[in-house]
Length: 133
Image 1 (cartoon, rainbow, N blue to C red):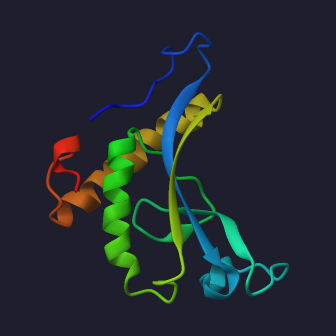
Image 2: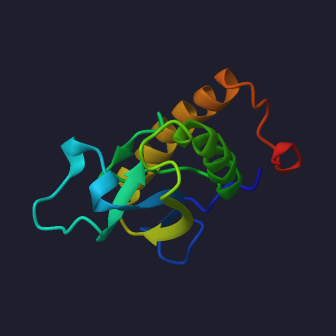
C-alpha cells in the first residue's frame, strides 16, 4: 500500500497529505440530523463526508492511503444499498494537501485504524493493491 506523504516529505515542513471520501446526495435524501433549511429538496449537498464507520457527516475523514480509501468505497457501496439514497448518491475519493498537520496526522492515524478494522470485520482481508477489486 502506497502511503500518502507525511510531515517532512514536502519542502514546507508544515504540509501533510491525506485521502478523504466526499459524498454528494440530494438534500431530500440526507438524514434529518444533517439537513439544512436553506437547501431546496433537489439541491446536491456537497460538504458531506463519510465517517470511519460508514455514516454521513460534515466532519472530514482522514485516511493515510488512496488504496485504503478505494477499499472503503467498495465497502460503502454495499452498506449504502440499504439506505434511502441507495440509487442517488456519489462518492468521490480526494487526495488533499493541507497545512493543518496536527489535525490531519492525528486524524489519519485514528481514522485509518478504524477503517482497517471495519474492513477486516467485513471480510475484505488485507490492504494491498492486489486485494482491491
